[in-house]
Image 1 (cartoon, each protein chain N blue to C red):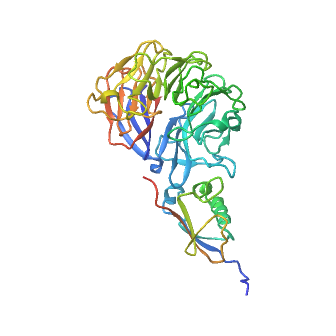
Image 2 (image 1 turned 90 degrees about the horizontal axis):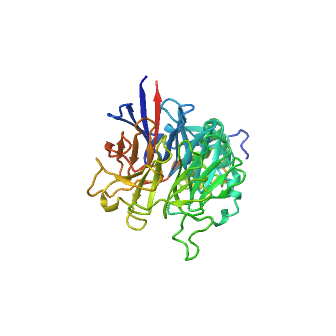
Image 3 (image 1 turned 90 degrees about the vertical axis):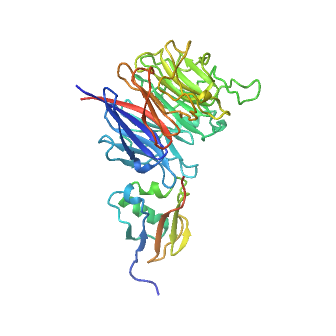
Length: 94
Length: 360
């Protein structure tokens, strides 16, 4: 049976965003049907956030990982209602 | 009236600021700023007093940072700082220049962006990508980077850029069209008979003499050069220097005949101080004769390098000269290279040194 009420996804943002986007909520609920839509919603709320998550191809940045319900996905991945989304910084740098 | 001298440092782990009064005797260090991102270049816009930092982060990509409170707080933006969808993304921002009310950013892979709102948003100067030789440009060891940005002091439509390893290019129409300006500069890495190409030279640093817009100097992978016609032709000035290789160049703030260089021991010889003895080389006659400034600089076991944007002068009289090393030290002279003092150490690898003098 189709869910009558829209159910937002739950997204968690990386700890390093605390410094880059003062006042950011590290955990929030967003209405989005794909990861790309989710990034759009984050950009609308915190301008500039898209450039920190995605490059201009556009793709998720090389050293950023997006997990949906435990699986690493790309920008075009669909989000089921109520999905659990983690945006994480991968191990990299030097 | 008291003067404040700031030495702005871009490093592998953030931006730092050294500050002194006009005596330049005691220096305080502040930082790191820009959330310890790798910062390739930090400048001040003298017209507004704003500070800008250019760089890129391993996770989050390229950005230009801005501070309007002397470095205490910074914001960042990449809006518009991108190539078209599907193309190789901008990896990082390498160089900044402020002038004529605009802010320019040179990036890797080589390209030029301009901002009319103090770095909030950026527009791609697409004309540079339409340059006929663009498909033939080669990446240097650090990548295909636009690292040198020289604005004409009076004509906002004239810009010179230095790209590794594509050479020097000039626009007279605000970026719509560009022409290579490399005649007379060598490309030793090309086959016999092709060592003076129209483009493809590995320029390392391009600077303009004060009060004389036609006078340019460049430090190149293959030689040191001077031009008196805006880069249309170049003459070698490397005679008398210990090598034909080095990265940074800095002009005297008032005298177009005076230039400072930091030659290194060679491109395949380690790229450190010749004979492991640190020296800044200076000329007072446009490169005809050179002398080494060594007093106060380490003369034993100095195996450091000085990167392409890590040498600068200030505008006081006598002029201050500053350089930052790959091993995180800053050396300063307040008498145009006569004597040197180490004013910072134990910093991350220093990418750039610029100065900002305010009077208040």
